Length: 157
Image 1 (cartoon, helix red, strand yellow):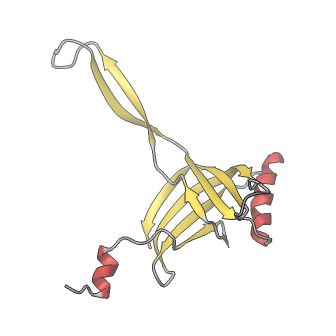
Image 2 (cartoon, rainbow, N blue to C red):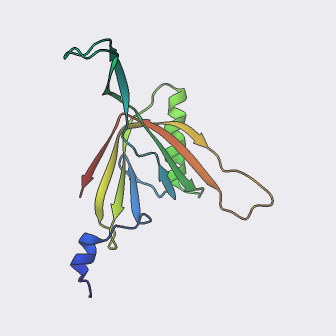
Image 3 (cartoon, rainbow, N blue to C red):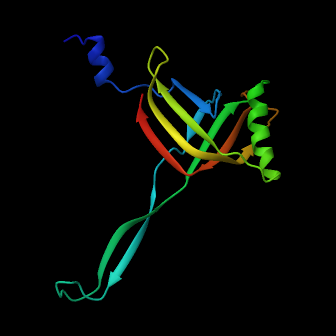
């Protein structure tokens, strides 16, 4: 049975290679993104006797505070202004003037239009890692930057 383009659009998952990253107002290309997750601490509470009188310890578990988002972005090192944007941003932390920015990852369809959007709220850089250098390697230079953020919002475009 042949599928229509509309059925393919609604029934098939989108490939993960077609995405766009916006940091503040700048769009920067990255080769890999990880760490976009929502998680909560858990609280365990123990009582010696339940309200119904059941003997023994009663343990209850409940959600606690949300954990911060820890995002890692990796990209090939190229000579461009995007390198200066990331370097200048993490360099500003040394001056105690860090500017928090929203990092938005758009998963795009085959036309390049955003379908799903993950918005990392109030992100700031915590670590910049230079490429690994090896005289025997045949690889591109990949640098990575780690961020910490307050929260994550997910929405369909």
